[in-house]
Amino acid sequence: MPLAVTTPVPSAQVKSALLLFGLHAPGETVVEENEATRDHTEAMLRHFGARVAVEAVGAGRRITLAGQPELRARDVEVPGDPSSAAFPLVAALLVPGSRVTIRELGLNPLRTGLLTTLLEMGAAITVENQREAGGEIVGDLAVAHGPLHGVDVPYERAPSMIDEYPVLAVAAACATGTTRMRGLAELRVKESDRLAATAALLAANGARVEIDGDDLVVHGTGRPPAGGGMVATQMDHRLAMSALVLGLATDAPVAVDDTSFIDTSFPGFVALMNRLAGEPEALVPA
Image (cartoon, rainbow, N blue to C red):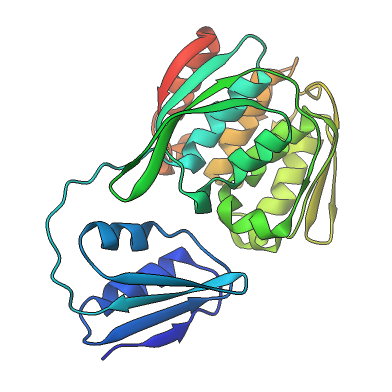
């Protein structure tokens, strides 16, 4: 039988599981979320012929799926992952002389919080060849080194960039002025306490950073911090990758205690970044 569920926490994974269950139930399955989360499942279901209706409800959404649809086979073009692309993207912004093009990147509006924030910071980023593929918006990002300035990042943006805050903090540490990232309570329950660990990453390498309630506040000086610190990654792949991106910009090397688990989300990351560091102009398949 169909369900009508309000998810207790914002979770695209829980929502997706409920919608996939709803495919097999007669009638309509309704999932309501208090904050809008990634909608890749909704887009994919539509791509295969399911009837999925979405209605805004405050800051969240109500998703209604008609059960037992007749699905049809379709080709699927999987776009590049914005969370993985964040690292070469920020590296290109921070390393003088860099120009990097990230191709076939997913530009779903519920995943582009980092891109929005970096553009507000003055980043030299251009979206090219934007189109729709497999129910998703995709495009290429042309990125070039340039100055950044601090901004206030609203808490409402967090769901669209929750995995990108550590590398955004690295960019903020190299920017001019203060960047405040608001409402990051969810970072405390990721692979590590990512809020505390991100602050420690920056502090160990000479950046001025503080945690104010659930806000991360980074005071940039307009140039990279000194570097030279050891980062305790706590087996968190995004912390490790963020620390290595910072090390590309600092005068002194940045050390991390372990990189073996980076392959969890980005196989070949270290080799790719080493190659980019030797090629100021490069193409990156996201």
